[in-house]
Length: 410
Image 1: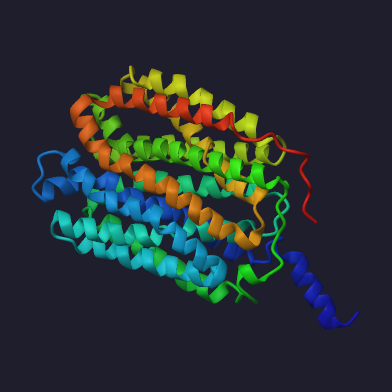
Image 2: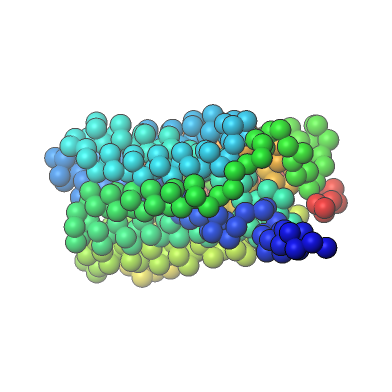
């Protein structure tokens, strides 16, 4: 064996199964944190921004962010198509730089409509990650559930960072810095990614592609995709209602006990950080057990927890909200795992894009409705509505076809 062959073999053995250096896999996971953090900076800082822009109540400014979440969904379809047909590496570079620049534009806004436009642009770039970054991360890996679980953990730590970092930056420097500093971080990540990520030999659509782990009949595949989309809509509604409303829910629940926004941010960040580890457990279970019963039980357990959270205050609310978020976050890996399990890699970004466009498009209504609903009926009623959504999701999951034996990827 020649020295060149030995070197090539050593490099191949050192690389993870998807063929990327460790720094690239790290950046792909960090991108998930960036994606969720940037979308929730506004929700954490909304009360401060509302006061500066002349609004008497944070709920009146909240609907101006709906464009970000609408584009987060609608933009996933073209992003997924470009990921498969143009290349995932190129699209991820666009993601990092687009997120960084648009976050800085948000910081420059002077009124609510400028803010809405800048947040909408941010949502358009945020749409790239899920249909592009996750398929890029899991291509050809033998344990996609565990990889998706870890990726979900990092993404939700981004949510925790939005609560903690934004709270302190708003308190110490101002809400504009809460967008500028993360924006600079995204630009730096983009530069490193462009330098370290190898060029793709061809677009995913032109390759052989990783085969689906479970082979379904065409009728079963249509049914699975329908259930996947419906479950994703309900999960996204719960995700958007909670992650966009929890900061104000905690502020209301701890009124008279804890009122410092930085401390409330720490409490919320702690909830998100602890709950995020549920995705590691669920991800590992996905590789070992059928999806249907696992997803069903996680959906069912959310129902009583949301009802309990509607009637608690202070530290009991903290405990109840933590339990709710464990299962809201624990449900996240399923849709990505279903795509990996049922769809060939050549099509994954496009399938993910279609699913995300429908799911996030519908669930963006949660952001638009959140402020008016809380102002009209209060958080307790909203939590009951969320329990109803969780019930619908459990019924939907029952329609998922039973899996035949899983064929291990070579």
